[in-house]
Image (cartoon, rainbow, N blue to C red):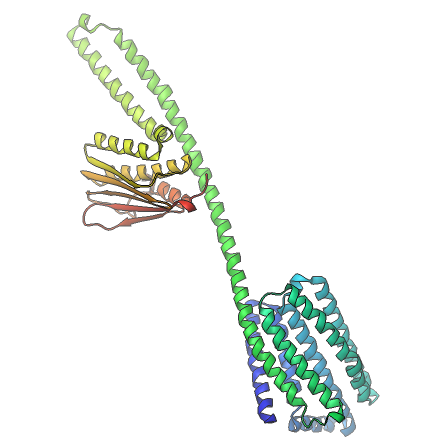
Length: 456
């Protein structure tokens, strides 16, 4: 039975040496490095508890050092290995429980004490070997090292309960079980009155229980690490997205200001000049002019009227004041009516759902997207019929622009026509833009979640 438990303990430690090493290489978490080191020294100690291995190692050393020296060295080394794996286990526990992040002062003190103990027992081991007194080393181990480690264990448990995440529960159960079993094994080995035949078996049981609970804690710790990494990754993406939105907003606002400036110059400048020219022409009396001059005056007046209307239309397209006056719905209905009149085609506008409540800036962006799509349609599709459908059920806003023309591919058309402008506005609105395949003509679908639209 004891050999079975011994073999199981060895198997568990070898498995976790591999697992801890892999996790350390993958995650760069120091806790896994120290857990691997702990397991390495623990395997060495557990192997040394098997009499054939212990005796064989001592016989090999006796060839070089002599029988007495070999016996002393093996005895001291056995306890020195215990110092090593308990030290590494404690460091692992501190990292695993995140005390290096939550209580740095306490963490630093524990590390300093462990380094001091490790150095002291290495020097003491060398000294005891030369004076051939392994009992002195064991006394220091029993009356100094064990009490100090127990005194470190209790405050560490308190701070773990106070600061660590839920993974601490699995670890504390496993660690407490291991410490309890180790104390039984230690007491049974040095107190003969207890009459324990094979106390080391409790040590092996403690290792197995601790490893099982640690595996559960490890799974939870991995989940926490992945959640934290995903959270950081999401924050980075969100930050980049905010930067893009800010950049798009600046570009689009600059574009709108430039459009407004050009519209005002056209309206107040050229349109004003045309009005003045028309007024001057009106001073000529057509009935007193010759037939030829009268025809010229009438033709010039007609050209001025057409030019004035074209400039007025361009000015309106550059800066759609109807959005301010009538809102997005009214501006789009007016736009659709003008498209039908100017291009001799049937163009309907259908709105259904709730009342839109969006900022003027966002309404302008939506208007511009529809304007670009419709302009591309009338210029390239050769359509006789078109339709704009808007459906809004908060927060879902769907916009569909379709026609019965020959259609066109967004990949084949020069981006300068306006598709790049559409793309910038779509990205600014966090919208989805899809060109669907239909039997005849083109169909563009824009889906906007108004809850995700930037507040500008």
